[in-house]
Length: 71
Image (cartoon, rainbow, N blue to C red; front, side):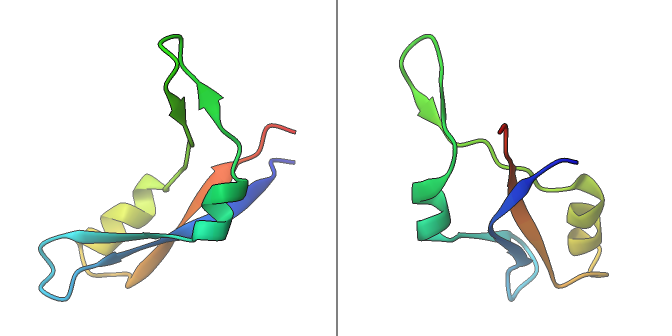
């Protein structure tokens, strides 16, 4: 079973011309990170494409952002 952690949400802007991304600060601080060879540190997050399409098309108001956990 794949474990994931809720990181935040994606919504359409009020005018519908942009996507608004909200990341929970506590979840971000606790998130698993990885480092690239050049020393940069990143937090990988996932948003399902089908739900993004539904947001863009106005079929859905909000969708979640998650992190797939490696342990």
